Image 1: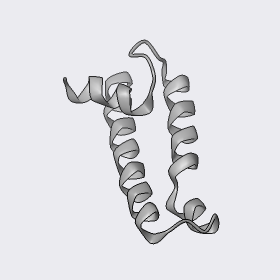
Image 2 (image 1 turned 180 degrees about the vertical axis):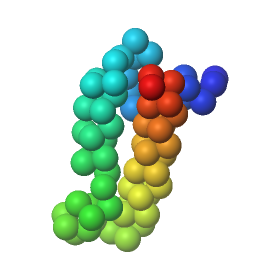
Image 3 (image 1 turned 90 degrees about the horizontal axis):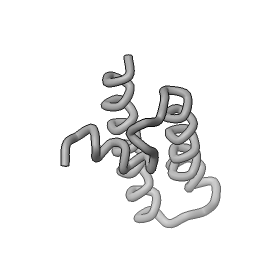
Image 4 (image 1 turned 180 degrees about the horizontal axis):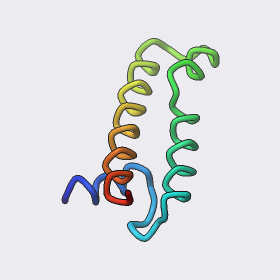
Length: 70
C-alpha cells in the first residue's frame, strides 16, 4: 500500500474524493478524536494518548492527500 492509499483509508474516503470532501472527512475525524474534547468528556489518560496519536495520523493523511490535490 502506498502512503496515498493509506491516507485515503485513514480518512475513510474514496480516492475519487475532491478537496471539499477530503476537508469534510478530516474535520469530522479530528472532532471525533481531538484530545481536548476527549478530556472534556472525562476520558482516561490512556484513551487521550491514543486519541492524540490518532489525530496525528489523521493530520498526516490529510497533508498527503492535500499535496496530491493541489
